[in-house]
Length: 126
Image (cartoon, rainbow, N blue to C red; front, side, top):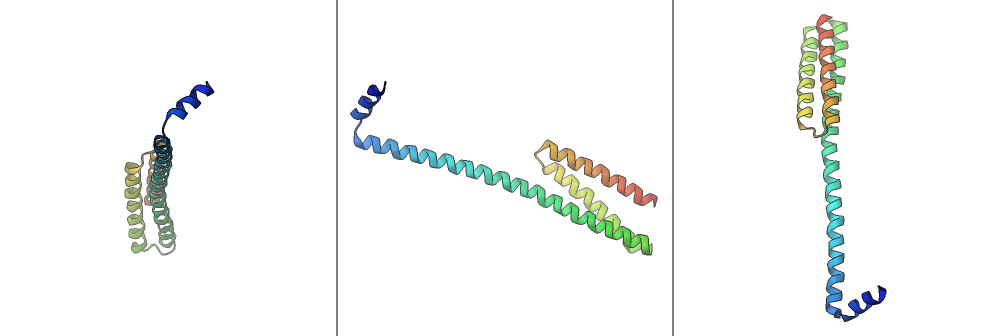
C-alpha cells in the first residue's frame, strides 16, 4: 500500500505537488476562519442578550428604589416613576423574548415577565 502511494506521488510533477500543498493550506485556513467567524457571531448574539438583561436589571433596580421612595413619602411622583419603570420592564422583556433564539432564554424571559406582573399587582394592592 505504501509503495503504491509512493509511486503515485513520485509520478506527480513538482508543480502539482506544490499546488496541492498550497490548496490544502488554503482549505485549512478557510476552515479556521469560518470557525472563528461562527464563534464571534455566537459571542455577539450572547452579548446582545446580556445587554438586554442588564437593561432589565437596571430598570428593576430603579423601580425598587422608586418603591422605597413611595413607601417613605407616598408621593405621586414616585408612584408614577415606579409605574413607568414597570411598564418599561414589561416592554424590555417582550423585546428580549422576541429577539431571543434560545428556547431556554425565551422561557426565562416569560417567567421574568410573569414575576414582574406579580410585583406590579402587589404594588397596586399596596
